[in-house]
Image 1 (cartoon, helix red, strand yellow):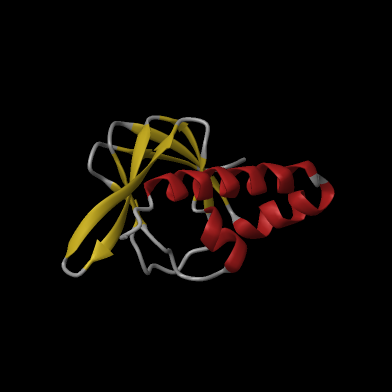
Image 2 (cartoon, rainbow, N blue to C red; image 1 turned 120 degrees about the vertical axis):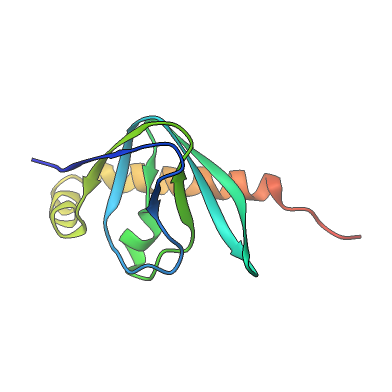
Length: 117
């Protein structure tokens, strides 16, 4: 049985630079994604109900690339990397779901990029 996490508004799920390889499924609520810029943090994205969170560290086993904080009350299901890896090996369709998530995030990031001319 998977663990469930409940976040209140402004509560952090993860912080940039933390070590962790768990992934999360956002069952309900909305989360904001932040990157450090000097001493300040800048919001760079939003995670909506039904989306995965933490997939980058899950896949590459590197520290968290961004901080994630609840915008509203949120419920998440913890997806431990060791158990999910075994499941992925037996259910290849989940690889497609992960790739789709990553591609969607890349598309969103590309629309925010501003070029200096």
